[in-house]
Image (cartoon, rainbow, N blue to C red; front, side):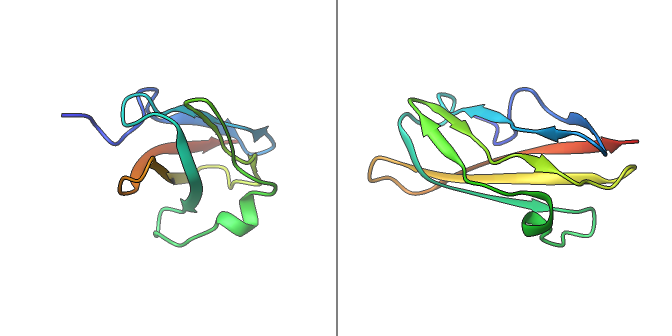
Length: 101
């Protein structure tokens, strides 16, 4: 069975950092398309619009997420990424970010 959590697991990110994460989709499917991302804080509140800007992109089997910045130190965030592959149903994977000072 394939886990929905990305292989790299929880990421650490400084409160002042701006990081662009990538996800290789070969564990789930090839040729991802229609990528969307939602970032939730520890209370499951959608904070995507306040901590991201730009667009997600795809090259081959690699999704490049829009940069994430402006996270609050000491908080944990869940990043949920949904995509389609071919004419199949959507896939969703996730990872956590622990924000450090």
